[in-house]
Every structure is written in C-alpha cells, then in structure tokens.
Length: 221
Image 1 (tube, rainbow, N blue to C red):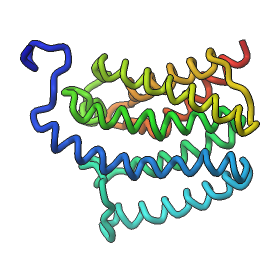
Image 2 (cartoon, rainbow, N blue to C red; image 1 turned 90 degrees about the vertical axis):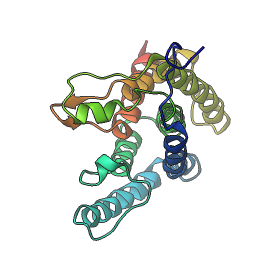
Image 3 (tube, one colour; image 1 turned 135 degrees about the horizontal axis):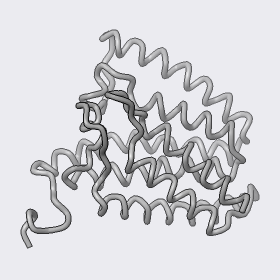
C-alpha cells in the first residue's frame, strides 16, 4: 500500500527529522535523574536540586534569548522563545512539590520516556507537529491517531514498570486504575496542546501535571 493510501503518512524527509529528534530526546532522557533522585535522596532534596536547576535554566535561557549563546538541539521555533527544557524543569519541580513520591516518580517517567517515544515516532509520521500549526495561528490541532495510540500504550507500559519500581523501593503501591488514568492524562496532554492565540503551553509542563492530577483523582475513587 502506498504512503498516500495508508493510515500512516510518513514525512517526506522522515530520516532527517528522525535523527534530529533522537538527538533532542537523548538530552530529554537526562530527566530520568529526577525519579532516581526521589527514590535515592528523597523528595525534599530533589526539590532543592530542581530549584537550583530552575535558576540555572533561567540564567542560561536569558543568555540564549539575548543571542549570547547557542544551545544544541533547540527547535527552530524556540530560537526566539523560551525553550522546552525550562518548562521541563518547572513542570518537574511542581510535580515533585504537589504530588506524593510514587505519583511524582510515575508522572516524570511518563514525561521522560512517553514523551520521548512520542517525539521520535512523531518525527516520522506526517502531521505530528501540531505545535507549529498552533504557532502559525491555527485554532485547533491534535496529533494523528496512530501516534496518540502509540503514546498511550507506551505510557501504560511505563506506568506498569513504575508501579513495580515504586512498590519495590517501598514508596507506595500503585493500582492499575491509577497508572491507567495517568497514561490517559499524559497522552491527552501530549496529543492536544493547550494554546491561546499564538501562545502554546509546552507539553513538558502539562504532561507531568496532568498525569499527576489524573493519578491523584483515580486514587481517590
């Protein structure tokens, strides 16, 4: 079946997009240090470390926006906008502050691994760059359903593995309904970006927050 007639339409230069996205997501995976810190050092120390990271990110971003430094693997539309890593640190900081350790660990793992997988798969599938469409003034955009389904299944797997991890380390025991709700929250935040006019809320911020909220609500039922 030709790409035009198939359900999944590939980007014309998907190899170039794929390699670029892999480079970005390798940096993205450094966020795995956050759940490791929660498990080994505790929530309080992790918050202090994230506060320092947030201050450092603001300083670096200020120099970037002033044109004094250039950062590797920055997207084209981030050259004159706040970069995704700033929202990543902010989202992680609020997640660790607002939610219990087990939920915070799972939410950040879904951000680190689920969003990374979504970005890499989306670099191949045509129509996945919904943020660019919103920045151009489009009122509504959502990712293609094959990508949404892939992201959900990956987040569900991450949720299961995280439930095993947090139980093994003594943080808590997460039921299936809890990390299922978290997977839905992470997938929705990734697939449907929030926007107002041409301002788009970065999913590095919304994914862990939405995931934490959904897991918390599911745990109350």
